[in-house]
Length: 163
Image 1 (cartoon, rainbow, N blue to C red):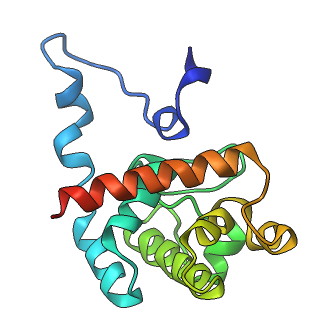
Image 2: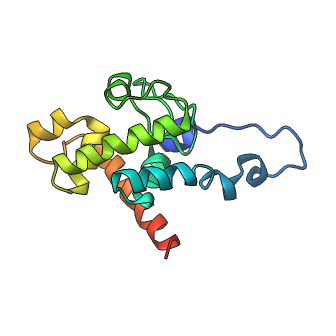
């Protein structure tokens, strides 16, 4: 059952402690995605990356779980691997501010590297720029292709909500 869940769902297993609580209350569905808006707005302004794109990456990477850790040792909201975190100046990957600023800085670097090509930048964010450079496009990796599709879906949803 757990295997059929999306990566962002796997990072958020919560237990209802009181029977009268609803899943919505326990998961704070209405507020979870807005909890980091001030940091996201600052990162968006600082690096010129659309706030909706930053939110979409966070949703796909960690489902807004600041202490998420992937099997590949990516950590925090934007799932930074240790070497990328260090390169972006992030000392505490579990600090939402540092993680969002560092993750957005990295995303901006990739967008610049691929001349604003969102497909390539997102592929590189997921699979690494070396793989994208080697293939000259989106790597033929199912996980990466699904990741790009998920981020773009969330980006579209957040963009429509902000209108």
